[in-house]
Length: 166
Ligand code: S3P
Image 1 (cartoon, rainbow, N blue to C red):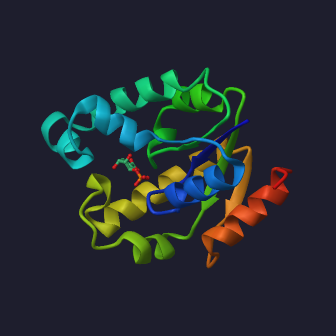
Image 2 (image 1 turned 45 degrees about the vertical axis):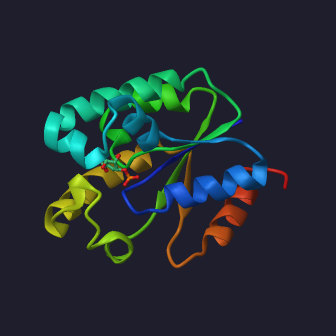
Image 3 (image 1 turned 90 degrees about the horizontal axis):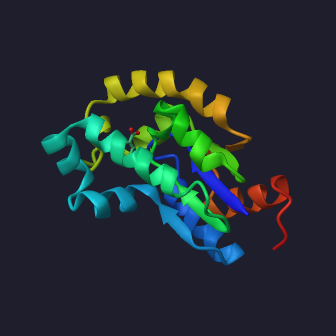
């Protein structure tokens, strides 16, 4: 089994991945953590020093390296859908789940934090959100609503939807 979580920054991918991994007793791969390990620097540093293109190249390498893997939960970065190849790699033998959340909810969750280079200005983040929602919807095998739901509730609903046995 391979579950790939996609969605905008702050949609709860990391927390849901962690809870799913625990419940299913499967390892969790945080793509951003893999990118940081490869680059040897933080995500804001990669964006500042090397630029987004370099970040996306490393991200695609990580997606490719995960294409043959199974029995894991993958938490992606919000921009993974900007390159369809990433989804081809990640979705191979896996189910891609979009964690859907309204932009206003996302702002409440992550507004004011400075660890996301593409969320510095809410207005530009909102345009990015609008653009990407169509991609998340297009690439997802399942869409999971997260609005006003606890992580436990989301995981419970995913279990039913994905017909997982607890
Ligand atoms: C990005 C989202 C981030 C991280 C990077 C770029 C994006 O991950 O990969 O800052 O393009 O949306 P999260 O979705 O985990 O915040």
